[in-house]
Image (cartoon, rainbow, N blue to C red; front, side):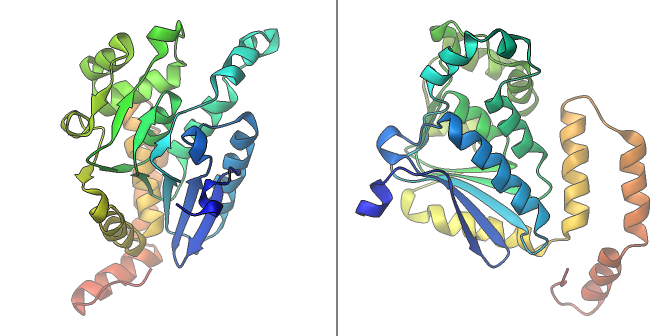
Length: 261
């Protein structure tokens, strides 16, 4: 690894055509998130969503791990604040929920281990492609922490109640094959194939209709959490039937070519 990659910084944004990549960049501390990183991430998410040229987001880490989660010292300091106790949610929870709600499709490129709150950060992405040496654990029960409710809900909606119980209540580490089996990983690949697999999926997502995808992603997430806005979903469906995307999609299908959205 280069000296530059070993230098700890705030999350790094890289743009390449229709793809944005956010790279967590504190490799010596397994990309553990600091309090100042949280606001930076939200700003990056806002910037990505505002840029119509960006069609897909890849979230990854520098070095041998994806992320060790949120700095526990910061958690302890925040827990002593009465105002924090009464707030709607922690700053970390806000970041993870913002990522899940992002309009563009998201891929977590799990370059290594994922621990603590970072397991929820990755789970907030639409897809997770991990190396076969990945591992994960959620240590909340071992630390005496009751995890925030939206994170528990995400685990249950994505992985099922039994898997959520196993991960939260035992606080045991699981390996990449088990992560794949329970549905935490979308795909598991050897390290040398990681970029190829991420590129393949990112290319597919970047080529599909962005407005239709954003609307369907929203509906799927709402259904998963039992909070579907039926009227809004119906409205998006009706609008898509007379929108520019469907016209181009049907024309491209008839002409046997890739659509250009």
